[in-house]
Image 1 (spheres, helix red, strand yellow):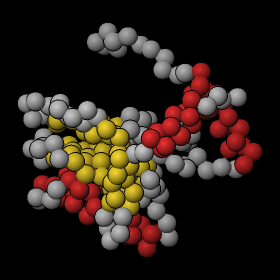
Image 2: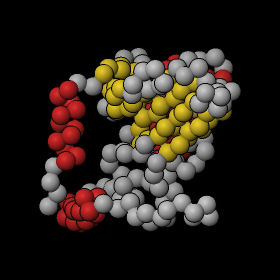
Image 3: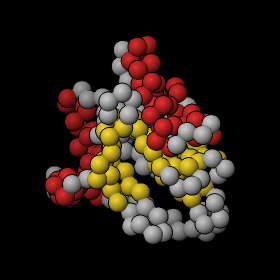
Image 4: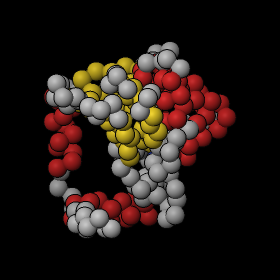
Length: 205
Ligand code: GLY
């Protein structure tokens, strides 16, 4: 506002209907608002070698008023050091914050790990730790990129993400937890894309 950017109400009619429906659903079915995740995290590297990391959200959909998730917290929801790389998180902030996972991934890349090694090493043992200590772990996923533009991802649920650069058009990939603290990554299928498009364009009553 101080720099005269236009102030726009981003609330679409569709989003408002989804919100009203979810309110009713929570009342009727006693649902937990912290199911699923939808924060968008991004890491960028520009031509000068400068990196940035960002998260999209003010918190989980239907969160309690006043709750602070991981997304605005440097080190938890995102972290970047242009000399090393960056990481960003999506998922249950209460658990992501317990591990400062974005910072931990960048720290491991700083020790010489590739982004994929750093993601696997930071995320999977931490999920086991959460399960051991609390009997459960929330759903979460992390993406990372180093200062050479190499990337990695780790997740405990099916997780789609996108990568692209000045020579390769953005592509959508799907990650799933693999065996022995690894991540399985594959391009999304046309069937997946069709089903996704159908879901997000389905009429809302
Ligand atoms: N990761 C979003 C939140 O926990 O609020």
